[in-house]
Image (cartoon, rainbow, N blue to C red):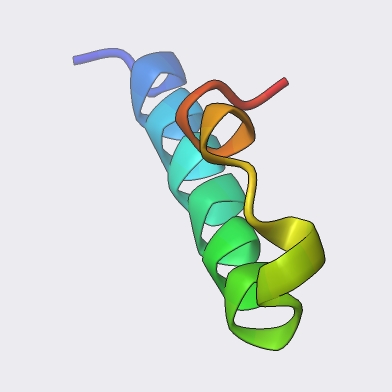
Length: 40
């Protein structure tokens, strides 16, 4: 099993966690479902 897909999954998960953290702190400005669903 290659490690690259795992790294990508980890990166997506990390991004998701950061987004959720932002949601908890700034719900009115950070709530952007499309950004959470489709990270850069």
